[in-house]
Length: 204
Image: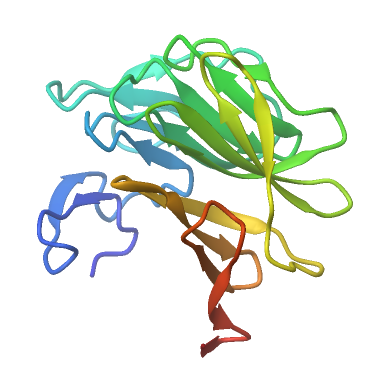
């Protein structure tokens, strides 16, 4: 496997990889892909053969990388998320909070308070799930149209926080979490109960 990996695509569940760009040049630790659109939004950490450092987007029908201003986005970016079909909607988790853009990443607005640190983001067709840390880990469901927020109960995460969020596109109540300490949890009832799948490096 190449290192740095660059951007690769798989159409067979990861059995094989198709090179897209920047293989052997750049590892992208903050990148999002639209589930339905296949559009890409990323943070290029440093200049490579094609791009300067900064934010870029590319549609599935165009090989051109377009620079994005990301005005208002502050802090160190830990995660990005792109709406499945509408790439105007972008979310970012950073060291200063969680931010949302409705114009493809040109302008971001913070939706968390100043004390919260953003750790993970995930967008489905109607909702943004975001994880934050402020004295303890939190998971919030944010309805995109109404901007209404609802707290989702987390498993017991002592001195831990959510690093990645995933949701079954066919069942919105089924959510998977990966934590900063390497633990994995699954809920099938939108957070009412959590099943530990990996704890302290051991499969449960």
